Image 1: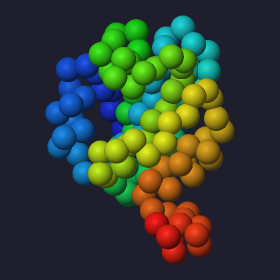
Image 2: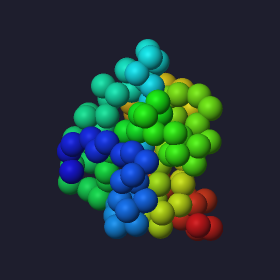
Image 3: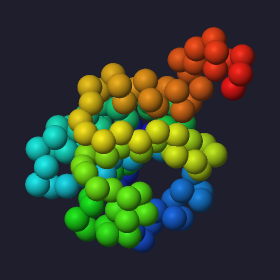
Image 4: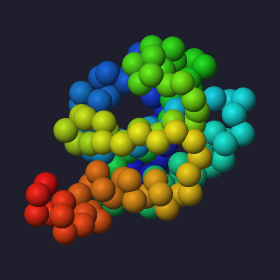
Length: 121
C-alpha cells in the first residue's frame, strides 16, 4: 500500500484489530513546522514499503483527542511503530532523518537484526 492512511478516534480500533501489517503512525499538528516536514516524508516511506506488509498512517492530534490521550502524546511529531502482534515496538519524539524511520520499520519487520538479537531474540 503506497498511500498514507488517515487514522482517527473512530476508525483506529477497528483498523488495528483487522490489520496484520506493521503500522507506522505519525502523530502531528498542523501548527508544527517539524510535523509538516515529516508529513512530506510519509509518501516516500509508504512507497519504499509498497511491496511489504507495512501501512503508513497519520493522526491529527488536534482533531483526535482520544488517540492523542491513548498514546500519551505530549510533544509532536511523535512516531509509533506497531508490530504485526499489535504491540508498540518503538516510539520517537521529534523529527528524525528519513533513514532512521526506515531502520525502525525494518527492525519491526525482522530485517536488519544483529547477531545478538538473532541468537537471543
